[in-house]
Image (tube, rainbow, N blue to C red):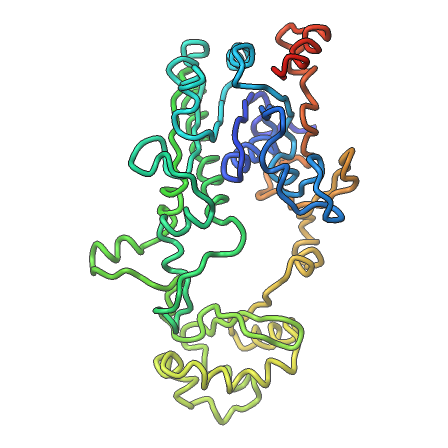
Length: 400
């Protein structure tokens, strides 16, 4: 079996939510040994659905499963002196510690970077929090919605033809996943440096700043022009610009492109409209979007999304189907690349989930399941020298 990209890397994962666990999931899926340190009641995401049959169960959370594939789970009570002592033993032999407690919590527990680096000088310590470890917002609690708003991305989430409409947030937990990806990049950079120098470092990750870093040229525009962009993407080629409109079997996204709009006349089988200002002039479409919609809607509503896409491509029109989750599972491109993975879980059964975000030819991604709560207590604590009697005693005292 080919060696994985992060084979040999040892990680302690004390993160919850989405951003931190997604970062460590990527490490685990590419070969790192990631030990998830959970409270005795389990990671908070074990309480978050979807659940098979809509029946809540700590071992059946679809959210927890996806964010924790290929990890090992141990339970540990940080509020006990014995728990803190055991954690320090675990830290001695790891490369990376990732945590997402409220700022200052690790210091309160006596587990700050300054203390832990005396135990393991090569330790990389990454803290993921909504606003970072410093500043007036550091103690605020936040959600994906909060971070999207304060990070600036929500301000641009409006239709191009309605820049004064109410801002919205992108579907899913996009701010959290953005922070997860950038956290992964940050720790990977630190790991590369540590390999050369054999010294660790502290990484302070602010989800708000991760979101703000994704605003493209919006901040530069304000610096140069005093312009706060209200839409994203900005419809520089006129309406429509990526707008989703209904068709016979769902939705299709329309982006005519530079100079492409006149070809819509041939798409809707009305070639006499090729020179009509509504098709030939972007400004006219921007000024009268409802009139454009009324022109094209009847043709779209009589045809399926893939039929429309094929016809549009032949005319070099950038139209594309808007796929639902169910349609994505059956998409021929996704199937051809064997993107979705299947694994067996002892409680959930056979589970299908999104696979590798990238294909590495020599150090491939690996499919795997999420761990059961405390599934690897004996294995991990056994490495520290604890025998079964000692583990039973620690469990009875509420330490593990």
